[in-house]
Length: 131
Image (cartoon, rainbow, N blue to C red):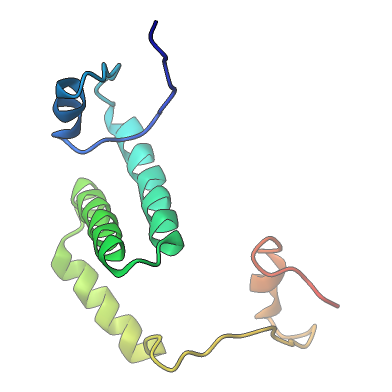
């Protein structure tokens, strides 16, 4: 008797052949362009979560590699070059800095008349109002 498990994930190109050689029969299909973009978005979230939950250094390296691979393929799929990403990264560093100072905010206080308040009000799941 066989067991069947639902997976619903985007796999690396060689993985199906590897699984089949292990006696694991894979039911798969080729995604449309729209489905592929959605699957890459989901894969980024999946890989970022795995990275965030890993603490072993060697495993972390592989999780970084997985996340970087998916991000690079996603960018290529959207026609975004590594140079464009590097340029945007540099501009953000120049404008906003990096993360080396380890600043972590607990809350922000904004006058009700400040137009910037709209950003926080429009994102209640990300920035719940405390008072």
